[in-house]
Length: 357
Image 1 (spheres, rainbow, N blue to C red):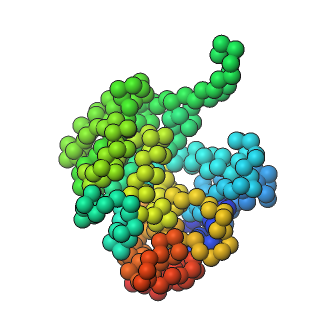
Image 2 (tube, rainbow, N blue to C red):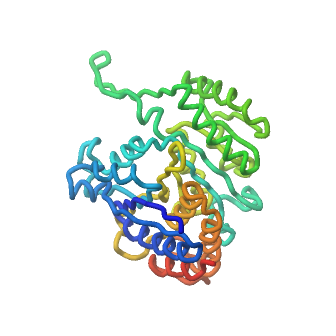
Image 3 (cartoon, helix red, strand yellow):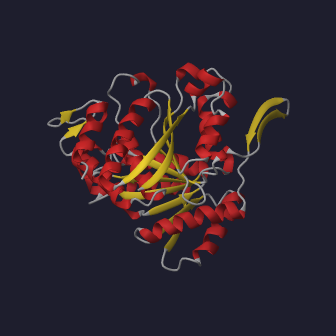
């Protein structure tokens, strides 16, 4: 029997609730598909600050590095909003990405058929399906560049630096090309090469790497145009590859086109098979403990974990099929519509478990 080691970071807010349901689903697919997952529970974010004084304890980093994959709930909340930037819960998230070398963030945006009516975009624009993938560079660019404050002409000023090296662009480009090769064979590289020197380097490098992938159709688009095209004609996209800050914005936009941010999973990948898997939504502290959070994005994140880190593709597909089947009859309050059964967080997890085949 195959054994996999997973570090679990429940985090803050609704994090513990949604992760509990995801683990129920994982335990059931382990039984059905003949493998075992060993869990190591560690702290991150606000819960880590309360317990240890820092958002990312060294014990958490060590556990993650010793694991095959990491499952994360969510971090943050108003309780810690007054802390300085380097000790806020979100600092733990940035730090774990850097510590594990998680350079590639994969965010699928798709509409499950039962949820098509929930999209704010007209059916005539969406077409028959929406299924795109945003590949975001995750540990470079402006979020990790040099920053600071100084005086300019006697007035306070602040700066953040956007910088990419050729190797950083090469490795994220290859991840995107590989993903496109397994999908529809189309890759859109998004930049701001008409203004930014870092984007010019980005575009030059992506074009050069494209020579290794003659079977993938490469196109380019400025980020402002891409933001517009996502709501004008989202069906034109297959895989989008872009920088850290542009990917942060575009992937959230794509998620709302799909109808609910509570439905979308993500994978952050390092070299090899290590990955961190999490829902793209936040910790929602206003509903924590109420039993109404949607666990499906976290459950779908486990499907990505099974696929990308463990190559358990049949088990991953079983989870996705069960979620789609559950949505045909039931909803959590955030995606509820008349005629469906309204379920709590735990009830939705139980329903998905019962539908696994």
